[in-house]
Length: 226
DNA sequence: GCGACAG
DNA sequence: ATCTTGTCGC
Image: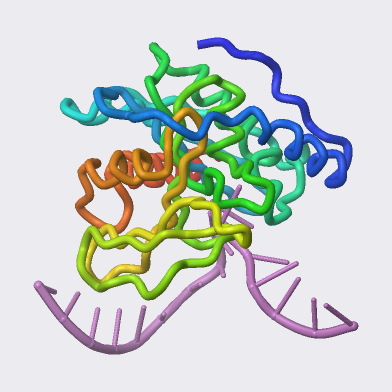
């Protein structure tokens, strides 16, 4: 698949301003029922080495079909600043997606969707850029207030609200005895539908299988560089 | 001014 | 993201 160019801001201030504009265009409704081919995105990085991004094309019934990789030299990376992650990693993800034999129907991204100060986590940014449905699954919370305690049972969830009371996503217990995941819609999907989608994914461990595979593949690809 | 802070 | 040993538990 080929895509529009991904602009790199000259400064953090410029990046923030761009996020404010882009987030206005998000569509936060829609269902992912019927989606079969998902691209799971994750990255690995080490100081002195390039950032390696991986896109695992995963068929919800057949399993993993293909792995696309994207590599960006450290010197070409936007700095890591909480809230501006997409400007650092998205270019590598776009390269990984470009390597796939066919475009996915939706994106499953390791990071936030709209559970973000300006509602433009990397999942939202990528979904908007590619005009694809996107869901964010993060391992840690960046923004939002969890409403109440999260039950220990596998599959439990608790809403994540903005200061204004808007539903940003959920804290989700994928398995018993694991730390909760942060699930939030990115683009072209509603919060509840995003949660339903993640809940339906095969999950052997903490992370949904597509993302777990992407994580493993990213680690391998990074180690295999030199 | 003091915390919080995805990957 | 990565740095890291042992340790608890299935």
